[in-house]
Structure formats: structure tokens, C-alpha cells
Length: 333
Image 1 (cartoon, one colour):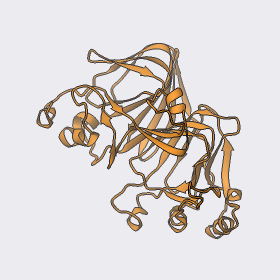
Image 2: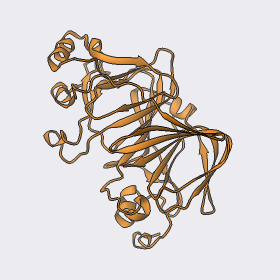
Image 3: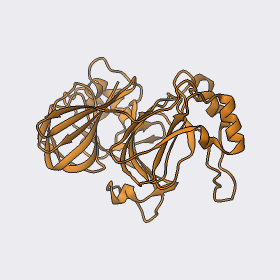
């Protein structure tokens, strides 16, 4: 279908994307062994960008009449079919990832939108949320500073190499959820596999890298001044989310998070059900189980690691359960 023809299309069917796989020194194999991604023989795959409209790294629509298109192309030609009435974004505002961390990630921070003119006014802020899919018994999340830590104290511990004493951290297990608003100093600990929902941004300032060296034997670059300028020192510790649960017959819905950028609900269902259209774009991220999504006589397989975008113009979808399914439903704000 041409770009001109899509403008008159009344119904936009669910969209699948070709993930972008990224290798990292801290990556592993679980993106392939657990989440069914087409990784190579290497054992250092750290990220799968499932749905992205980030400039320079867009995921392409994998199949159907719009195969090979980017989300920006659809937004340009028919934003109402994608987002619904009254919604307008220059880029798709949410980026979805899976992350496999076999080693601790660097201690980092993302600026909020209000801070960006000082750094890069062409980019958006970056708040993100994590849902833990798997974790080793010793796995920890580092989220925020201990209460009362000041910039001066953080600098002192950074110089002494004891910055971990300033950090709020806790063990995590499968199913835990945490929201990391922009301005939060944070790190994903070793042994964690997670799904990440974030604003479409990749602005990251690394404060500390745990005394590690790169392949040449040199420390990796850090951005101390930018990072400290971005940290919200009034935020303090950031704890796990406490979902609100709604129970139905064989179908549990948890309200994980509603923030200024997106909302996340977790569905756990043992029986087939109808996913009603919200007249907004809905992103489905399958965490466990298997089944199918049916929409307008089209069928889409659901399995662990699958991500689908259900446009606002899509009719109500039926979800058929083969084995009990757990999935996230993400809606842009």
C-alpha cells in the first residue's frame, strides 16, 4: 500500500515489528533462550528493542500491508488511525525493550524534559519502568539515593570509590515492578531479565562504572558533571510499585503505573477474553504463556517475548488462551 492510500484506511490492524538486537559487555543469551529472539552464537546480547521510533534506530513493521514501514511513516500519513482522536506526537512516544543483564550496568541518570535545553534541546526526557521477568537470588536494583544524600556527599563518595554507600538498593524477584522517573540515579543489577517501558529517548549520563575497565584496560567514559546536574536530590529512595489488583473469573488485572508519559496494566488470564478497544494505541508485551490475538479475521500468535501494537482504529480483539498468559498493556499518555 502506498503512503497516499493509507490516509483513507478506516481500520489499521495490529502491528508486529522486527526487533533490533544490541550486544553489550554485560549481555547474555536469555533474549534467545527465554524470549525467542533470533540471536547469534555470541553470548553477549543485552537489549532487544521491540518497538522503537527513535531517530536512527526505528523498528520496522515486520509483516502485513505496511511491512518495512517505520512508525514515523504511519504517524505522518494517518495519526488518527494509530493514536485516536485528539492525540498528536511527532514520534511514537514510547520505546519498548527487553534487557538481559548478566553483569551490573553502570550507575546512570536520565534528564527530564525541563533539563534538556542545557544538554540537547532536540531530545525528550526519559522516564522508564521495569518489570522483572527473571532474577538470580542475589540480584538487586539500585534506584535513587538514600534519604538526605546531598550533591556534596555524593561527590565525596564518588572520589573515594564508595558511591554504593549512597545508593538505595533492594533485592528483586520475578514479577516485581519499579518506576524510574527522569532524574533518578539508577542501575540494573546482575542476573536480571526485564521488560522496559520508556519515553522515546536515549539520553544517558553515566556517573560511575564500578571500577571496571574496557578491553584496552582503560576506564569507560563517565559524565560526572552532567549526571550530577540531572539528579533529583529531593526524590530520595525509589521503591517497588504496589499494584492495585482487580479480580475477575480467571482473569486478574493489575494497575501497575499511571504517570505523565504512559500507563501500564498487567493481565494474568487463564481463559479467553475480549480486549476492548480504548480508542487509543495499546502495546501488548507477552511475559508468559501462549495463545492468539484475533482481530478482523487476522490471527497473531502470542508467546513469551512477543510485542504487538494495537492501533486505536483496530476493532475489539479476542485473546484466545492456550496456556495461562501474562502480558503488559501499555498506553501512551
